[in-house]
Image (cartoon, rainbow, N blue to C red):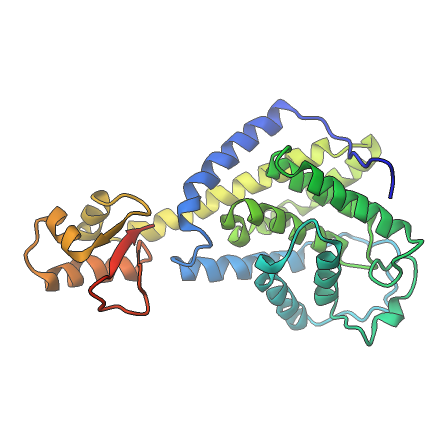
Length: 317
């Protein structure tokens, strides 16, 4: 390992503005956690992330890619692999190289029995010694670990994204892995990023995405790339907020009134809610307030498996 790995970049006013804006929006979205209360939005955003990832592609294959050796999976197979990878996000340590290797193997459809076809200096998980790509990747992960808590996650993850593409440790899929690992780093900070399809914004602006990478290669630092990724993340959050606001707008005046009397993440029993609403009928409460709010994902039960429990409470989210 090198004495010290310190990726070059400059903190700019533009970065700080985006970091502030994205942090504020992500903070407001934190009440939705992993969007489990918004299953339709959650499912749509996961699908959008994967579909966009498959559409983002450089004009030329990654250097070192040998199509005669690496079979191109069908789009359906690749979607399944990416879904499995996304499902594993909570089990992964973004600073662990073995987790990185396992994730790449899952994305590439590899296992212990067929790795030998990639046995060359470009394949990180095959040649653990004397391999410059592995050494640089270990240095990058060590830098990530050392700066966690010191550098803001939005900047930290963007630097990692760029540096990983610069290193090109794998035979293929380096840009896909870089984007997934940035999502992992950000999800470790705020779960909302697990289901934020920032890849869709990169897809819309992928020409600029790849030209910015080329520009940074020429400049020798990732400053422009960090600014670009922060802008894409900010755009993606704006779209998510709009999407959730539209879903919430479908609430009736009864539900809106109930929500206005509830604090976020504070459990209320049905009796407490009835008292606040000055209602006398539990049937009215269920029919006009609780059931519609539950259906829209605006509140959740503290005991979802025991709907009729006397200890049941409801939480605004």
